[in-house]
Image (cartoon, rainbow, N blue to C red; front, side):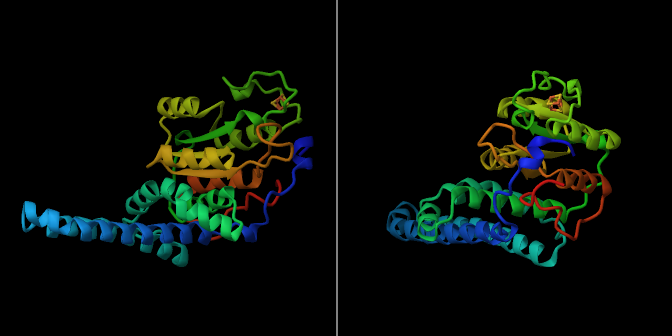
Length: 285
Ligand code: SF4
């Protein structure tokens, strides 16, 4: 394509460094710490609970076992899905629940912060790893949606910083001059009939979702916004595409057009995608 932004884009991180296991290791480590903490709390509160009712420690203990059992089943299903490369029956809700409960805890937990410092892993690396896990769980699921049930949400910073055209209200106002990827995105979405919108912030994104009621979202944004968006939109599936920021944050960013197209095809097709959808860090298509 003829975009100067695209040509100048540099990969932010080689594929191999963005691994699903980074997030999963932090997830399990934090859960084990939480498990030990809850056991310790139960143990020291045992005499007090027993004094209230002799059966109370057993009830509280059973509740803890049930909670951790559900979480453990969720972990198992995530790992099984990744290993088998297929959707495990009825596991979607359980896996989403685990990610919903543990996602903020995992990324911001003191143990994660300590381990990140020790092993020189940035917060963005953990967020990207989570995004990879999220995307993988979507790509092994079958959808078969109609185009009007898919919403593509784009950040304002994809638009060329010198462009005066107002595309926030309607992306089709774009004059398709080729100076940024908005032109190419319109060209990709049009034949499929998929709606693309520019969301200037989380509030507008939520408003667009409430109005259009999509069954699936493809979102382009930075790590933090994608992670927040995936969490906020639960249980809606959000296929996340990280933007590239060769000129710094929030200015003249770009995204992998091949991955965007593959995500649309995946949501429309009703088939599992056995191969990884095109990687987001490898430059543009
Ligand atoms: S007119 Fe469209 S393609 Fe050209 S810079 Fe503006 S948004 Fe980008």
